[in-house]
Amino acid sequence: MVETARPSGMSRPRKLYVKSYGCQMNVYDSRRMADTLAPEGFAETERIEDADLVILNTCHIREKAADKVYSELGRIRQMKADTAVQGREIVVAVAGCVAQAEGAEILRRAPAVDLVVGPQSYHRLPELLDRAKRDGKAIDTDFPAEDKFNFLKNPTREAVRARGVSAFVTVQEGCDKFCTFCVVPYTRGAEVSRPVVKILAEAEHLAQAGVREITLIGQNVNAFHGKGPDGTPWTLARLLHRVAEIPGILRLRYTTSHPCDVDDSLIAVHRDLPQLMPQLHLPVQSGSNRVLAAMNRRHTRDDYLRVIDKLRTAQPAIEFTSDFIVGFPGESDDDFRQTIKLVVDVRFAGAYSFKYSPRPGTPAAEMTDQISEDIMSARLQELQALIDRQLKAFNEASVGKTFDVLFEKAGRYPGQLVGRSPYLQPVHVMATSDLIGKVVRAHITETTAFSLHGALSDTDNAAPRSSSLLATAEA
Ligand code: 5AD
Ligand code: SF4
View 1 (cartoon, rainbow, N blue to C red):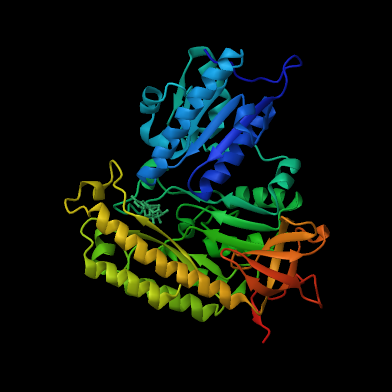
View 2: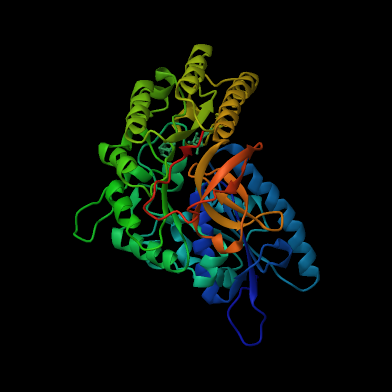
């Protein structure tokens, strides 16, 4: 039996510890779970040792990500045994894509787990905690008919403030693309777009509580087709223009995009909307047409390059990041060379690269010509070294430029603030804390491995909202 929390005059506030693995959607979902449990008497803690309820919000995208969860559950089992001796019971919940993919198997493999909840059932958490208390264990991996977003609670103003000036808003979830390597269509389900009015209400609430930058997120965000207030489906382009009108919103981003869904209206937004940052994460996975076809990516290498060209024409300051998989089944040396060549041709401002990881239930896991670990390691090393050089070159080229910086929080040293450039690079500047939440021009003087250092530009500190948010060379 497990003890769960209910607000009560007798009991101390229960503590909730949520750990997110994987993508930004999980970070967002973790917050919505915490917001939904707050009225149930749970206050968030950053220390797992203090927690009455631990939620691991898991990722199933690669085997390594899923394995991490089980090693964490091993540690938690020990902690749970120790605290039980002291008379304190900890409830352990597994949420996210491992929960969806493995369901009851988790309860068998990890006896410390009391509750398993899939991504479409988070609104049922209070009820599931009751069920776990009553029955000892609870599991819900349904794709319910009701929309969880209608039941999840919004954050309080205090919670929004504590989380900072930049926030995510889910506009679309799930994926219908079925790339042959990917578990997402199975764990997150079919593509569903949220209605525009709901998205706007959430964005307005965040803006009123102090959020200045919104990143619209979705597994396939540019396939967004949510119902507009007029009853017709809106494109992501139209949504971006509308969110930009919300008072207080200074910056917009969206992620993650599929190259096939970058239409002309979206390209035009990069030209026309100064609030939209000139930075785009556009996964390509491989530079070889043969591999792209085997991956069922539905685009060729040239299709991808054409999209990049069109975006650069529309917005010359735009920079790209991407995702790559090396060692997809059947990938030859020549295929891999094509990937290297694509990276050289595009010149990315950074990228994630992964060894192919066979995922149960996906078509690629059944393919016969799996690539050896040695070959994958060598290819990953070569690709990462190239991407690292491009990232370094990009950061070094920032020195001497002036960026608009959105200040987020105090830096490590007294008197220092940290903000983000339009390209998401952390920028460290000596500045007073009243600039947090403002976009201010800074002259970049130095670069270290992952961040920039600069000084406030002498003139025109507070960049007006409509000003260009792009880098301008000051040479
Ligand atoms: N193996 C390796 N990497 C994968 N990704 C998705 N599925 C797999 C897999 N089976 C990578 C892709 C995707 C990113 C989120 O994770 O590059 O864009
Ligand atoms: Fe996975 Fe492909 Fe959908 Fe991205 S587009 S979530 S890689 S199936």
